[in-house]
Image (cartoon, rainbow, N blue to C red; front, side, top):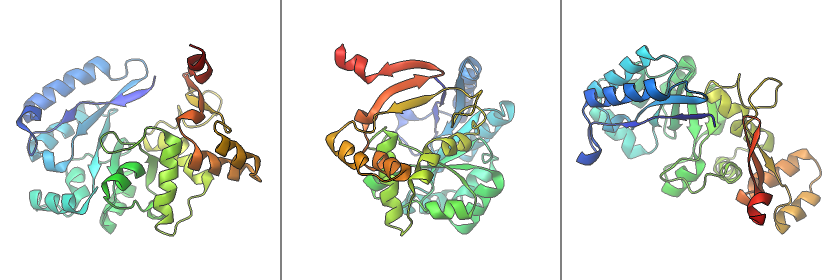
Length: 284
């Protein structure tokens, strides 16, 4: 599988048994990069938990690692809720805004992916665009926690790369179809009509571009790696009814993103090989 992952790095404002010194974090992370980064289809993401659990010294170590290994990714949280934004301003009074903390330590860029981004200032949108950084829009997590609503229309206006994320801790599903359904609701609450074509773009090629991997994955262009799922559009009676009454491909895709779930996934293919079939599981 093509996987990008990394050890969480944090040295303050967390339980003692989860903390490490900046030097420990640097050494452990460096060892993991040397062991796993670019091994087959694996990639490493430098993962400072988020600014409140990162001292300036730790962020300097993250920057040092990225300078040593510039083709690693960077992943962290940004402006998920308003209390967090205020906390960051108190912890880093010298920086202009939340994103400026990461930008100051040279942690923005084409391989940087910032989760959530619900409460951004105008300058932060501008910085995301100028640095070619990306946003991971995590609608199920944002709705579950009541953190706020991601401004998808603004991401287009500011020309900021955006992909759909499922989150881990607070997300309520890993299924991308269900996640797109929640993204539609988030957009509806802001009077933005999320068309099925745009939704599926964010979940495929848009996500690939957010990770700077669109030369390898994201669509079916000849020569790309064949990572895809096969969908059963009539997996449930309700889906079958709506599918049969859909007038065009866009209505059919809309049914998939609003009614689809794990039952809709018929097959999963990894790098050109079928890794899982629902029929095989049903007959096992």
